[in-house]
Image (cartoon, rainbow, N blue to C red; front, side, top):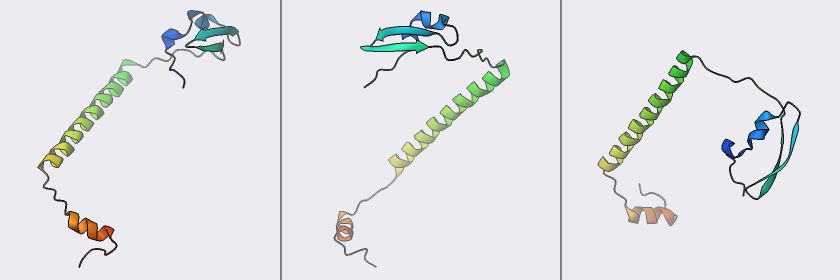
Length: 99
């Protein structure tokens, strides 16, 4: 339906607009866009310690998921799973489990 617009696709003139200004229609990916600068926000930077902690947590979480997935894969490989089709077909036939 719609293609993703990368920030590199936005015309550089858009970034020169003042608050409230409108830029005429610009063609991009077979569509036309009208740009309006609604607001200008100051850039937000994080101090080193905050960024360091967030990056560290990101990679720790990723490592946890990798280990978890490896553990689950190992369990599945070691598991001794038997499927008894005759019992399943009895349950599907409405007879219920045998006791």
